[in-house]
Length: 516
Image 1 (cartoon, rainbow, N blue to C red):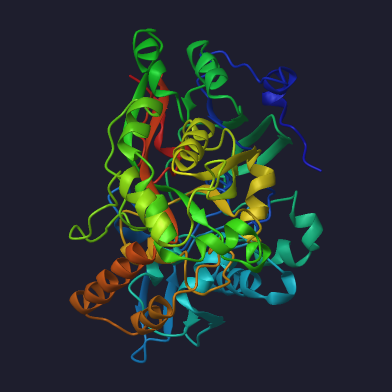
Image 2: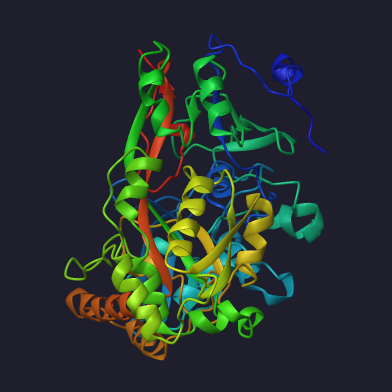
């Protein structure tokens, strides 16, 4: 399929493990916990996959670490008066890996390919972005602009567009959907050289890409599920950037003389969701969690600050809703197990002779989020302590992700959804409809859905914020989640490079360079 580059022969010969000497000034190595789902640009949902994909395909716009929306492939954009079309002027000089010019025609192709129901794509763009913005289609304007058609104006559309990967029409039209799974044609800073599943992905600088400086000739993403192994590889000099370093290893890494831990307050929402789908409607636990008082009581059963202190080695404030840019007037649920038990009694779920009120299964991933298995087990224990017998069922993210997307994880499911620094509505876009794939628990509150529809068309930011705050109060009170925390992120960074992590977990290899 793809020929490994001669200059990287020694590198590839060291697979598996792909151990690298730090003397290799041309190669950057990043260790993540999860492998790529595929190389279909519209089939990706997991943040680690999207991190890799962002090196292969470019986007119309970009979101800066500070939350500003800035030009990329599009040098400018404008809304029409009706607010149902946004036109992007594509900059000159863009070229695909296949040597063809990347123009507005390629952009329209990318937008329509993602949204074509015949393709059956369920990735981030068609399954989240398009549902959220009310995607209707795309076309080429008379003045060679790429025009995106939506239900109505929304302040989130430019930022959402920054999540859609742009690919090359000629090459992708010549491939079947099956061929596209493993044969990416790059429009971004790197091209694929080699992929060994569950081990590594090797990328090479794309000479056709000139939008940004790309300091490293070669980029390797290693798949290392165990956090302790990622840390060991960092300290051995085989990894330059390691995600989710265990907090209790910070002192060891910082004293190593070869790497440091860089911590940021992340935007990823960590929560335990209630699954309202028909799959659990007739189970004992499914019937119980349909009661809002039960859901509120279960929130009060969890001591989130203690979980953070003991399992994450940091302090954190409990989340009160789904948005990073939330309403400060909405207070988080308190830890009050006595009140939780009283509410469960009043809701008609007393303890039985065995001390159990009802039973639930909590499904979630193992080794995807920071100390996730320990947190899931802790949540299960807190719930069991108030008589809600909860059994954790942990699995690899590759198994859990499709279950969550298909509304089959539950009755409780543990997940972390990426968030934004630039828009509360982006974070609320997990719930654009009752059955959207990103609405993993199929939460369907009529007041929320009605207000969601009114957001389309509001151009006054103060008016928009007033609706947002009403929706956040509905979300808090209806409690479709057991609210936990915004995940703190701990990155191990080799002393040989200069690199700063972002709050939103996006890893941009082209922003790293050798330290002076």
